Image (cartoon, rainbow, N blue to C red; front, side):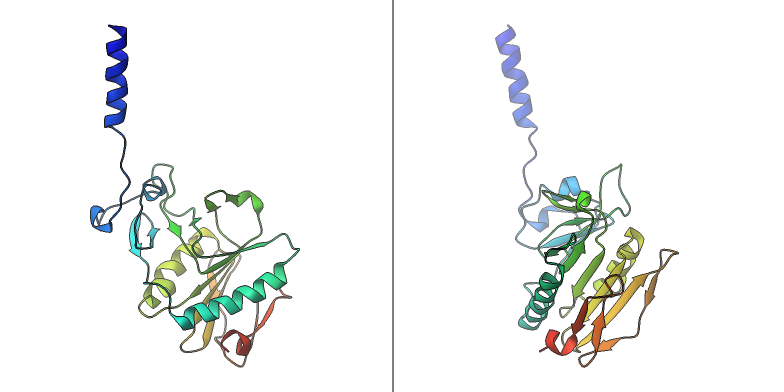
Length: 212
């Protein structure tokens, strides 16, 4: 009798195992999801969660995007080598404390580059909290996301400095968080300017090298 009861319990547990999501068509485009849901997805497409809503990322970045990303990453690695801050490049999950749902994260992004100076935010799955600096490099078709949607969540999460890099126009927009927790936009920088990070005063990027 006890043996049969044990078997029924095991069968019930097996019957309730949640299967991973393998195709985005299995998800409700109007649904609200959490990071716990996100971890079960095994999608071919790269997606992000913004306030629980699914945002499909652009297809594989083009040559200009990757070239600029590599140039900035190289400068970052050289500058931060031996320092306490760490540099991470996409794909790298950042869980932001924005619009949490039932105590769970519902905003998960993959910035092109980010700098994190607080080791306590890092775990085996990525970053839990706001990076100090985020760099997003525009690809055709994703300008609205970077300039509006992500601007809002990065500001709300407390990302101290946010760069939007446009490889085609060779322009960089820099936003710095003020004491009131709002972004202040600095003057646009073009390809013959030098970009000096506001929160890292000694970090300077010659944009001719970035866009070369």
